[in-house]
Structure formats: structure tokens, C-alpha cells
Amino acid sequence: NNDNAVNFTFRVGVSDIMEDVKIIGGLRLGTSLDDKDAFLTFQNYRKRVDWGLTYYRSNVTNYDGFFRGVDTSLGVDFNLIDNVVITNLYQVNIAYPFNEVKSLRLTIGLRKDIGVLRPEYASSFLYPDALKFKDSVSSTVLARLEYVHDNTIHPADNIWNGLRWKVYTELFVPANAASALKNKNTINVGFDARHYLKIYRNFIWAVRGAGDFSFGDARL
Image: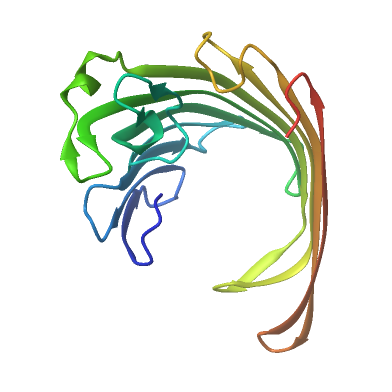
């Protein structure tokens, strides 16, 4: 969430006795306490179709490159004006399992980035003219569709046995003119395969192969 070398993370979750409904929340703080991440997710596994809702929020101070330009009258570089970027992500996920191993999953979300200039230049002296600039608001629609094959078991923390792989496609569409995509669409197609071989007890051999290909007007 920031350039801090040390972060503090707190995460808690609750579920019913059958673990059909789960609520999980978390908070991450940097050493400055100004930069922070928080999320809350609700997941429902009661029926054949699994679904969930997720909200994520991030605050980052002095985000490099978010504001660009120069005040020629004072020779002020907008990128050096103190700022805070607030990111809000609203997400819905749906999964349809064909059996215990295979499933089709869809995630749709809206990401909103709000950039606010502060009346201070390079954290050294006041720059009141920064208050005259409007907040920068960027909105992007996100969608991800994936087919998942997961035949692994999980005998211990960070220990897996078996094979799992997925193929997926992603779509990023700007929702307003201020979006970082500049009215350009991005499409990604990729795959991710992992095989975990048990050697002795909890000692395993893991092999991974992955690839990603970008298309559209704004390739990654």
C-alpha cells in the first residue's frame, strides 16, 4: 500500500458452524499511519451458486506521478505537491461449480481513484494555490471470467498436494474521461498452472507455469 518497509496487518473473520457463510475484514497500516488499506468481504456458499461482495479502500499519501503539470508562474511541479490518493473498490463475485474440482467464476467490480492535492509543496513549505484545483476522480469497470480446475488438497499451512490450473480473461473499461486508461479498453488473457508433488511428509516439490497476453487499445 506504500513504500514503508514495515506494515502492520490485522485480519479477523467469522463464519457459521458449517462455514457456509463467511465475513472477513482486515486492516493494514504503514509506519506513518497515514497510508492504510482496509477491506470487508461477505461470502455465501449455501447454494449451488456461490456468491460474495467485497469492499476495499486504500489511502496513499504523496503518490508519485498521479498529478502532472507545472505552474509556470511559480515554477511549481504538480508532482511534488503533497497529495493523497483514495482508492475504493466495489466487487461482486459469482462461482458455479460443475463438480468438486471444476468451476466457472465471474468477478465484476468498479474501481474509483480520487486524488486530492494538499496545500504543501514537497513537505517543506505551504502552497495554498493547491486548494484551487479540483479533485481528480478516475473510475474504471473491471471484469474477470475464469475456468478453474483444482484437484489439490491442503494438509497443512502453505502445503499443497495435487494439480490446479486455470484459464482466464480480464476486461478493463474506463467509466469516465479521467480514467487512467484514457478511454481505452484493455483485455488480458492468461493461464496459471501449478503442480505440487509430495516428497516426504510436509516436504513438497512445487512447479508453476503461467502466461499472460494483453490486447486492446491500452495494452499492459
